[in-house]
Length: 135
Ligand code: THU
Image 1 (spheres, rainbow, N blue to C red):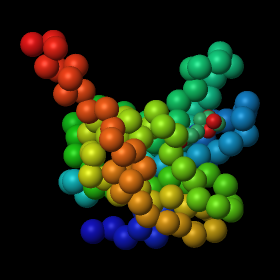
Image 2 (image 1 turned 135 degrees about the vertical axis):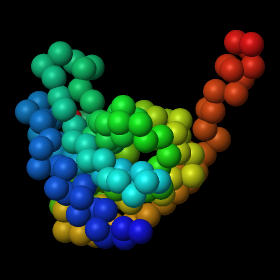
Image 3 (image 1 turned 180 degrees about the horizontal axis):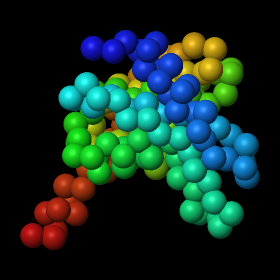
């Protein structure tokens, strides 16, 4: 299986294609599917407020729309210092498909730390009450 450092490199490669003329905050993500396939994502902004999409969610949408729904690991990178943190919305979207996923949070210098999504999004909303009331 691909290592954390290598997945982070994939996220750096994805970041090159970020479209962020408004925030100038370039983000890259690489999502490892159970199949072994890697899905890259970059943030895509829009002049209309609220229509921008995060790198992580681009990667998830690419994977799911290609038939993959089980994920092992996600790497995310933005700046050259500190560790890039996925936003709350992206954490919830990851939780939908992969509550057990490991998240590699890094920077373009290759430094990173790894946390589980359970650590990043404790006591998550899992839709169980919603699904019960709908039946
Ligand atoms: N962004 C991401 O791509 N991922 C995150 O987890 C947080 C924020 C993007 C969205 C926007 O294009 C820019 O970073 C500034 O918020």
